Image 1 (spheres, rainbow, N blue to C red):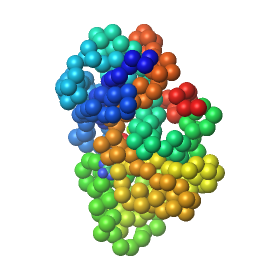
Image 2 (image 1 turned 90 degrees about the horizontal axis):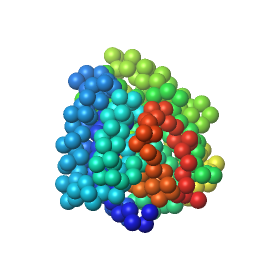
Image 3 (image 1 turned 90 degrees about the vertical axis):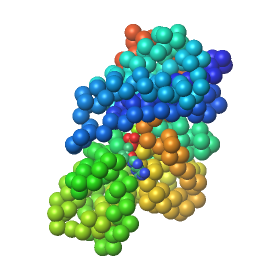
Image 4 (image 1 turned 180 degrees about the vertical axis):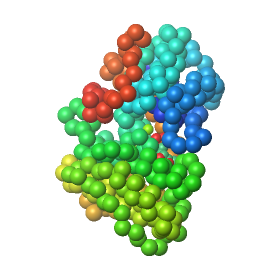
Length: 330
Ligand code: AMP
Ligand code: MG
């Protein structure tokens, strides 16, 4: 498999249709995307998948053009097989199967969570960090152990990004919600008590969201945003600190779309300082959902024979991070 030089990756788990090309050295040659933004409310799976179908071709063309390549130079095609929204995953998988057949190259199924981890790990050059993965759909504290990324804490209900984005919508702020709430929080002064729910190593954000929306009718939006972020990030920092103490990992990697939050970065950095652990954040260009991370994780999987026949390339909407064998790490 040493002849593999360039891998193309397709991402389509939720709001983003992405296509990226990476080299076998982990260099991102292109990372094109189109993002579905609902007219109102949260993501509508069928509408999102139709958006992806309509934008797939242009996004793939753009990615190849930015990388200055044509399909014949691609050595393998990777796609996000899960976890994610069924209709969206199916659209991306269809595009990836077609590209793999057209180019006559291997097809590799990639777990989306693994991709967020590996794209962060290749850049920070840490072999074995504790991972905090926070996005619109996932909130996971994970560490590699015995062949897999084990879960040392996760949300019991909604994801951190989903909680904050839904609150932002309730306040009439647009998308993406997290940076908008962060700007309001910068002006906040008074802490408003909100439910802080940590159960063992897991967090729960749905009651916090309900209470924050309820209090939005009577509270100053800046104070409420500040309080919501302090509680939501504080819960995550608590379980992260325990995971760091328990696993004794030498470093921490913050990855996923919400990793771009400087407030969250500051909080986790201070946890790291207390435990003498090195702190890293994924680069903002590859923090949110993107095709390049799928391509890179696909490359790692291909090296260990994780290619799949088109007829067997089913999507896995509920594919958990800790179900995946990670043979490229020992
Ligand atoms: P992902 O699902 O990984 O693409 O991440 C999407 C999440 O990232 C959403 O919850 C967004 O509100 C959030 N997000 C987008 N931009 C930023 C930013 N600059 N800082 C923090 N979070 C952000
Ligand atoms: Mg994601």
